[in-house]
Length: 575
Image (cartoon, rainbow, N blue to C red; front, side, top):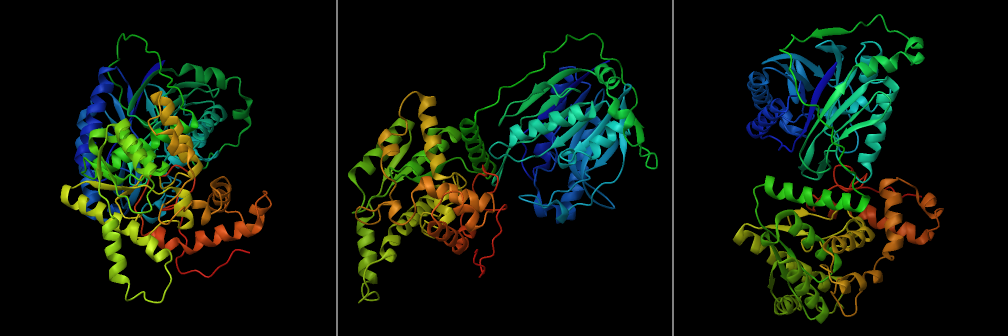
């Protein structure tokens, strides 16, 4: 038989139970108009993901239960799979099966991730039930995100022991570079290994530092790709599934006959009441959205994460300091693409150490992007600070203290504009600088959102060049990409005066932060041992700065934030 399935990858907001419910209702109606038999929504889409300690509020759990019951009547004539949190003696990460106006079944997530950005063991009890649904003679297994990552997880049992032809997995799998391709390989393997159709529906949108990339998909029983949803956009992926092909291929699969049968734990089969036949309907061609290349993929993730953080937190406009450097230039371009240039205000704040070309480049960038640019010279304020502090500093030579007065003045001005006009301040530091503490606390770290916080410096250049390629012109001036990076806090200053060159710094940071390599292992990759130890020392001693910085979009496998939990008070020295 042919079963029409719709995967509704939607962008929801944590805690917005009414808004999320209304979006699910609207997408359910859309699926009905498209003739779908089953419509599938992402993991915890009703509550938003991750709701974190909202899950410790009994009134939130009760409100989520009430919202789920409100959804049920809207499912007459079809089946909907909806992710939520549900309390049944204890709290569970739940896939609710709504069928023909009623709650027909509840599946509880078995594998609760407690690594990286995940803390599900903090909140949920693991499910243990073994069930399959019977929908018009099609056996359907339901699972949630992590359940399908394990080769011997619940989907395997549903297919092998429960006889499921169709394995539906609802997910809220966060993005990082390369994650989507790895996820797709895994799902195609699960489909082939279980000789089953796998339908995977993932969340899309930004939530604090996380971005969910969508990329929902359907894989056939030989691991072939049947359909793929768009990345970083809401989408409705509709496909007609020929479930008979599962039985046909299983006849040729001797592995199933030789597999151990777990007869001591029989499956519960939940028969969904039959629905009126759909009648004649035109066959639908399943969509297969193209995959983005790595750099465009990261750019889209940063745009989506910025847009959702700004809008979901009630802001319309943002501002940032424009120095004429590559980091602030890329941040401004991302903000303009995310929010529209009319909602981005740049502020140039030159001092005696600012070169003429820096202000020229900031003006040119603002003109290219169509941003409003305010120019607020701060040298008089800087001098006033120097004069006020002169008696206290008497007898001490100028050092980094005087340098840091400048970014702290800039941070104060940006926050003053934010207070006056209600604009959100975007910080412009990249992962390389933040990693080694090359920033000024309460200065360039002051703000509400750090757009490129997880972007290494060399990737900043790649993203900037990509933005120019898309535009077909130098939106980010070529001089910005060519000149040596500098904070311009003293005469002739360059970043390389204080740090290793970025082509060396970035891979050392990657090895230490993301690969957890020891100094000896990093040096064995061809890096100077003294430089490696220096970088690691800078990373470890600057955790106190990172803890006080704003959140930013996660785009690497291990970002500073929820992924990275280094003690501030810490005397361990890597050998």
